[in-house]
Image (cartoon, rainbow, N blue to C red; front, side, top):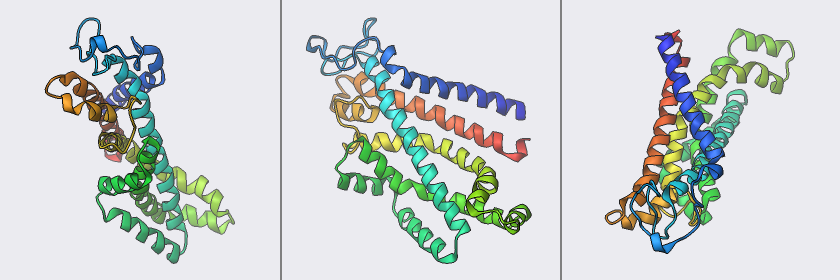
Length: 270
């Protein structure tokens, strides 16, 4: 059982790494300039010359999907890093601090959890005025409570253990105790949760862009590309389907990687 899970983890890890390499070197992998317009070949169907066809401005869709991986994947990973770090710091503070700080921060997290995440993010992004950076800020503002609660529960459990009590009695400072005893013992579940969250954050970020509150044209970003071409779904479906399939494949790979990582970290599989 453990061997099979390990093989799956390696397989999906390689696929995720290939996606990251694609986004890193996307500028060198595009067969055409993704922003070069040629109206003479506008809305051309997929062919040997343009594998995914062209859009309304004659831009090569394959090139735009490849270069769009930069904005879509980089933004998603940045967002996940922000909410993981922010939520973990808040959770550890709540777990180690006095009751007053814990109550205040947890009630704030309850306020964010009381609303549907994407709806709340839409409101924040609308107030901020849209744009990719503002979409990341909006989603980060509503997504950190999950990690804060996880880190808090793990910290509260560890705070009562014998080795943490011994470290405290020996005079170990709070900061040193966090980095030496608390964080190394809670980082596993947090990392698994963050990997599982990549697919969700990618979908929500693409959703904000699709609704006009994320990346703005002509920036190649998968959600924005789908929004820009949604009126042509009946006449030139490849313009909408190409970035849609890219989102589907990327989300599926990261979700499968997260599920396999969770199974690998489960003590029952050891």
